[in-house]
Length: 378
Image (cartoon, rainbow, N blue to C red; front, side, top):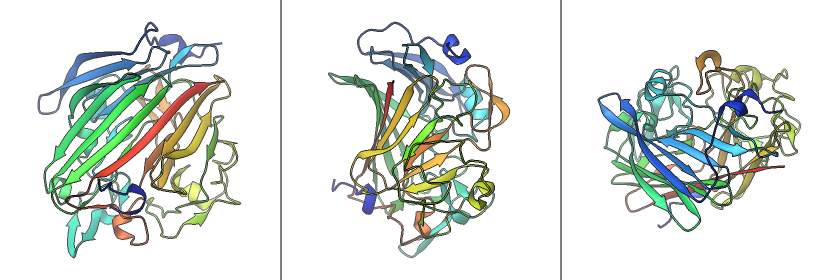
């Protein structure tokens, strides 16, 4: 891969009232059985905490971020990500990809087709006529191997998965690790590494839905968002990018100055109308260098989420297709805009757009990338 991913040459809300992140203390990690995935594969859950009120729960099915607890300005702790209660729930309601590690190709590939080195490949389509998040059985539906990771100031889990050549139509056997660590600075750090034995394409991300007021507490329309990006990728009605980067200036997509997510989401803008809200890739400056690209703040709780990445894009998605048919981990129904995603990644459909940063990975190269979700309150 070239460009941004540079394969290295190497009053408490109801949600707040119902959650308990456990006692505060030093770095800790707990490992426990968590049901069975299709095919009889056992699933485990890891709970790790930094002793400062921040706690993460992840499961080996889909390397899914199930919960993320964080204190508000008064020290009250709430789960700030959308998630489900059981493995069976994640299997039954896979469409929203709640908290999942996404691959082999995050976002969309038009028609599920691309050509690499003169050979055409077909990915099973699962989003109308297009392939979304790796096809019908992406990384979000795999049981990952897991290893505990601990340093002097962080704790977490390294998830690993090896996909054989031809899986979901993609060439090359791909070995992927996604390491999630929580440090004593209240940062959840995601480090990706991938290698292949034949030329292939990949695009990795995590699909966490955030609600800084607390999971199940209502819409995120009043969350104030900043995205440091001069442009975005307009799409067609099926969310396939049209091609050129468009400037955000003068449009509802401009979050260079802090703006409430709901301030313009209902504007009469063709892009917003087609997507039912925001579901667009923001094009970032200085790809290849880890830097802060977005900040979200909930005025009610005072919680702040910062996002840093070395990727060329970040997808803002406002839960446009949540329709109240799924009840989350708190037992409350998830409706449109009850959470927002900031998915750090390459551009959608890049294999079919030579002008976009390349998502090709070749033997002997290493795809590496880092995303940091920082939590605070003020």
